[in-house]
Amino acid sequence: MQVKSLSFRLLISASLVLAAFFALVSVVLEQGFRESAEQALKEKLLVHVYSLLSAAELKTAGELNMPPNLPEPRFATPGSGLYGFIQLAKKNLIWRSPSAIGLNVTPPPELNPGDFAFLLTEQGRYALHYNVIWKNAAGIEGDYIFTVTEDAQFVGNEVARFRETLRGWLLLLGLVLICLQLILLRWSLKPLRIIVKDLEAIEKGQKTHLDGDYATELEGLAGNLNVFIHSERAHLERYRNAMADLAHSLKTPLSILRGCAESFSANKELVKEQVNRMDEIVEYQLQRAAAKGEHKPSGTVDLAAVLKKITASLAKVYVDKNIVFDRGVPEPSLICYEEGDLYEIAGNLMDNACKWCRNSVKITVTLNKQKGRRNYGVLLQVEDDGPGIPTDKIAQILKRGVRADENIQGHGIGMAVVSELVGLLGGVLEGKNSEILGGMKWCVYLP
Image (cartoon, rainbow, N blue to C red; front, side, top):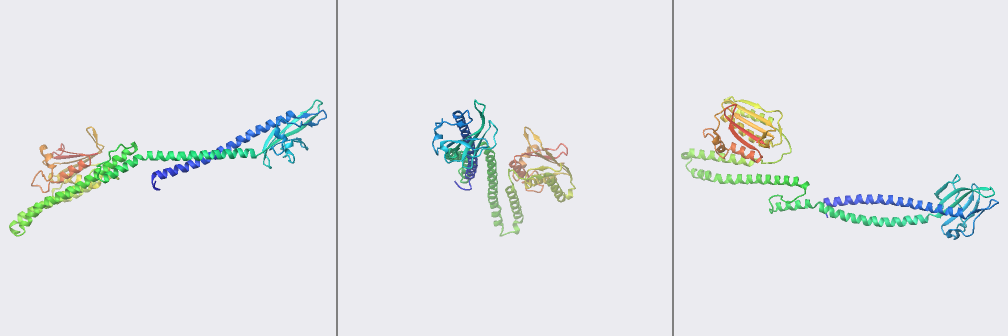
């Protein structure tokens, strides 16, 4: 597993979270067990206090007498860890168990009759002090404090055993969870490995696109990658075709020019014709190769600004016709397309309109236009007041090198470029007669 891989990073992150969680759990459980053990010891010491109370006897003279044999054998064994003491309140010790020989009792805190106190002494023992007022048959009473202590080592040993067991199980559980996490990570990231494998297959030429059964979250990525791959292949194919067509198309004119080189003056018109033909071929191939194709640009373009620049340029080119441009374009008209594509489409349509018009050209832009059952984001309409084009010839002029009128200067490739580019962008190009100006009307629907 590589250090930079997502699996490694996720596994380390999960392991650190698990380690922190288990450490916190260990501390909390250990503290809870310690408190539970202390509570159990407290209840146990209270039982021993009650056993001492039951064994004690207050004589008629007011003296407290303890029998030699106590209910708990540990009280009779020196160093057993369980010790008993009885003392008069605020007075000296009057009894200690045989197990407490040589030990001093810890002074109890201030207690009211019937109260008890459980605490850890400086000697490392847990002590339970119980204050009781005892009255005999003669009416003599005494204020006694019964104290039972036990070494803290008992609780410490229990906590230590619990800690060792707990940490062992938590470590084992952590290792199991990390292994499960690794398995789950590999299973969860398997779709990424599949799509990477398919991309490598595409790179080696074994596949043409991503066609696997990918996870739902990766379907959008796979779709976008397929669009990108298709767009790049189409773009590369256009360049290859354009260069191949250019090379093939120039063979014949070059051969003719080579034959005319010896007697140039006699073939002047033929040479001129072939040069014009070569210029036409080069211009068309370059325009076709420059077409961007379908894509998803990252920015927006103001179509109104583009049309304004084109209008200003055409007004200078056709200054002798004194054309009146009627632009019905909302400002701004922000759309998500490449500026170069918009110049190709709108420029060719408006240039043709200026060539054919008498003196009027109308440009209209409508956003969020619906055509049939398919929604389009932009509708661009270019109309002129020229003679128009017969309906049966509209499809013909969209082909390469076909011009509506051979007397009009041009190469007959502008509308072919527009048709190809609109198709690549997923749009629709329609031509019909203009209801307003009476000439030609071109409608471009872009998604």
